[in-house]
Amino acid sequence: MMITSQPYNRLKEALSNNRSLSKHVLLGMVFLSSLLLLVSFLQDQEELDFDVPEKGSPAFEAFYNCVYPKLAPLKGNYDKFWTSFVNLTKECDNLEEYKALDIQPVANTDEVKYVTFPKRDENITMVTLGIGHDVDAEMRLKKLWPKTEFFGVDPSPEINKDLYEVKLGGNYFQVAVSGKGGMQKSYIFRKEYRDETTMHIGADYFFGDMLQRPRVDILWMDTEGNEFPVLDMIHRGGPLDRRGVKICQMNVEIHKDLMKDITGEREKFHDFVWKLLRDKKYIMVKPFYVYWFHQFIRTVIINVDDPECTSLYMN
Image (cartoon, rainbow, N blue to C red):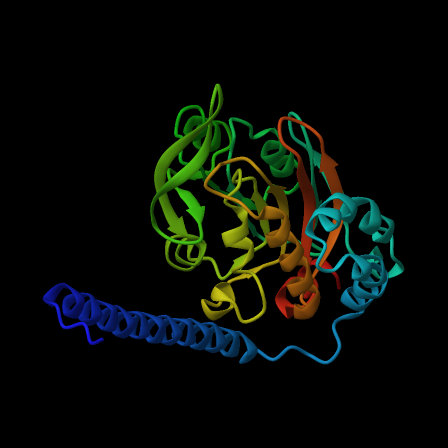
């Protein structure tokens, strides 16, 4: 029996239209996915334009040969990689090839920073991302190396501005530095920590256009969850390389689970370390695991590849 009622015909037409719409949606999704893959591929190619040497410096090769066998079994296991990283890699802190580095502790109120000091008398540039109401370590560094120019960045001017400009004699910027510009969440310290929406600028813009120092000798970064977008920029062929900015050494706090909007930190840390090993540009020393309000890792990252950095800090 042939059904020819108007409701049936309308239903048949709707089903046909739905199938056609689904087909177009599917094609659109395939096109969008292909476009995203192409963009990712082009970004990777742009980074690969900066040739990775077949072999790193002696300091890097020593670092790699020590840490790689320890970390390789944990590749892909983000949780175990996070919890095991410090105990595994701290065994690699006193390698013979590191003896050229003059690494000294500089204490803050509640932590210890580590500074590699220059081998010759020269002016150096120091940047603090995240002041946190404390410049004790900067003051000690100033006494140890008076030829240091200080630049401090923190979205909260209360206390921080006076500490950095008046007490330390440095330069203060009221902004948050992360991966891109715009109003974004920050974890701010004002008597206590809390979430706030603040103005952010990209690290590549800050170092390349605002700071305008092609060589940053010392970077201390404690940005309470916004460190990963900055760390992503330091790789070989990354945004800072393309801006002509080199960072010779950095102390970094690497956090997880601070803000609800920021997730996947253990995976990001895992991927950052493996990319750093591929870069053959930096070594990681002085790892320290902190069990406090939130778990986080402190580490020191030293550029053992750039000739300007190595000639000043290693030779």
